[in-house]
Image (cartoon, rainbow, N blue to C red; front, side):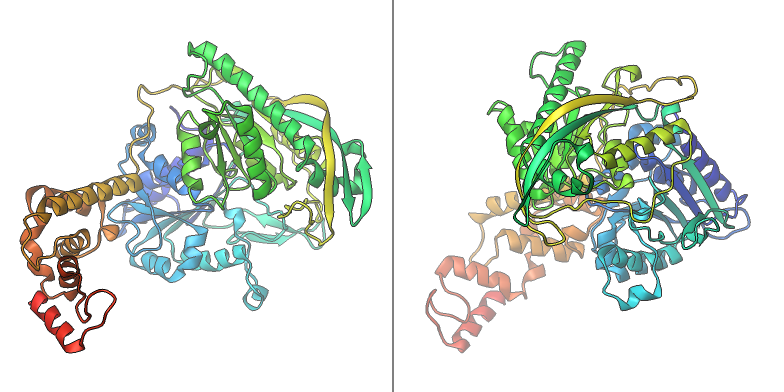
Length: 630
């Protein structure tokens, strides 16, 4: 394993800051999607945490806070810190935990990972933490945060504006900032929070990003450099043309090709993605991925249907959640009934275990197909994804770059670098062709053409028959017609670099969140075992239930298990393995709640009440409670 060019630059900068040789407070890393951006906070933490420059009395930073745009990325951040290869390469032992908005987010570790949404929900909690300790603040996908103006305070705040308002105090109080993004532009043309802009002399009314600011260091890593270093693999686009027919406000429309759609492209795509055309794209992507997996099984010497890493996977990006459910049912229908549920996973915000499904898709051989809308496109690190069915209406170039990047990561189990391609199936419409040309220009080293201020973006559509602007659109039918492939290869790339090496044991060790969950489960099992063992021998009036025993432990150790560090959880387990909770029941002697639970179980009477369903006098009830508690 070796550092990429931009990772080496980040390490050099951090070493210089740690030695007091660089007066730098902000590092901006513009890294192409799939280029290894998630390693940068690990590198920065390894070189900066606890480092005291000559002549200073305290460290530059004492802890790290990594902010990600989605809950699904928190686990990836934890994994990056416990990855054995990175620990061996960088010589660090730091760990971070995926924190919610409970106090003490670090729990004795080097830092914590949180989301924009969590900070916006409890900004005071995170700001207090930043004022107690000097933090290295790593903001992932900074372009999600729009710059703030005086109008934002008066207007009703949009979600991303609320994120910016909550993040700004943390940026101001951080000891050092590492700002990361796969794109330094927003689709709405607004400036990005914390970045400086100047007026564009060539284009009146436009702003240009100002990078030459004192105290700032800028590290760039574009697609061409990533391909040259084999950090990502080339893309092969499978463009499908089609025809569609629909009713818009009662008027019938029919278009024979995407290239002929012109001003009818929006309703045509809306129709195509919800009728027969979408099923044809799914079928082609599904069959191609299945054939690819069969070839990989032969290469790996596996039997039919046998699962293993490196076979390839399919990611399906749907236009909305209802359509995603329909795609899932179609895909499961193409599998045998035994493996349909396990082979195709649905990850949308309406599904309660969507985060766990994405984790299984990333880390395990099955499922081999994941259907999503937006949860799993940005930042998801799943090198096994080899095929993508792009069935979304969005045509923002940054968004499509993020989507395509899910398949451009090199899979160390997927064969040689020369054998791997990211295959993207998509509608052959003019706006997607513009995106493909932008990719070609970036890979060839030419400057990307500047977008016009009114770049077209298609509606997301939350219902099948209603467009966002209120017009009633009823899809009738559509079908796919012509398919053509085009592979976008790098131009003028440097020679090949040494290939990746696979460690003997490349399984990720347990993350802090997984360790805490395991220890809490173990504690719950130990408590339950003592309750069962003590139930038959407990004395009259003596509490003997799960909640009472947990109350004893809470008073004995001074905090609930949900607030404990790993070391405190392990200490509580050690105590339970040597002691009986029953010997400490005096700690809840004065709490009438547990006397009530024992009396109710013995007599069917509630303190202060008669038999269940009846009411006794208050004095008698209070006397019984006092007797039980005393």
